[in-house]
Image 1 (cartoon, rainbow, N blue to C red):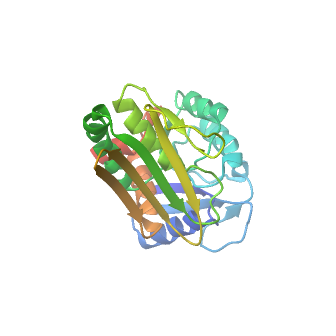
Image 2 (image 1 turned 90 degrees about the vertical axis):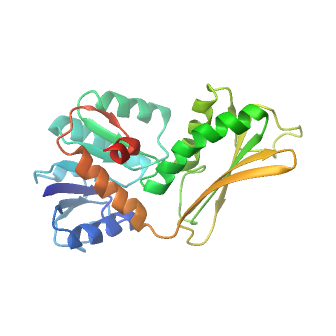
Length: 252
């Protein structure tokens, strides 16, 4: 049995994780943290993580970028491993994450699903074969109308996987409306759509002469991210300090 503090417990993902944990025998949420302190489950809910006195094996964070610094500081001070699922962090915050990982175990992922993380691995050989042959690369991501950051952290992770395979030769292009010019050979176009209740769709297109290769992932339910976060929490509990990702969970 692992004990979890759920940061962002009254958000959409926090509720899904809470529902899944309530149905499991080997995971329990001992406390929740949310600016909305409404109590929807058996555990206590605090407005700030510093108010939590409950002992926990791991913190799962599905909140907003503005809350992340406090969560990291609390985990470092109390030596609690952190599953960091929040995206849209600034460069300074990313540096704080790396510093924290020297003190405690931190698992950070832009997307917690098994499918997306498998897609990341598939993109690397695809990029070497297709981008190396001159195919252009475009990424399209779609999310619900409440998502704050654009492009999504997952879209950036997909672009990073391609770029890593190509020795970081590519720049990212987020907007084509500001200038009238032909696309560059070494750029990855990343476009965002926000609307309705789209859970999450990501498509990476390798566009060549007379042919297109498309790799796509569609999330039909938020439960895939919740299940991944819980699996990550089990993986991370008891781990030594370091920066981990979902690839480590997949590999066991």
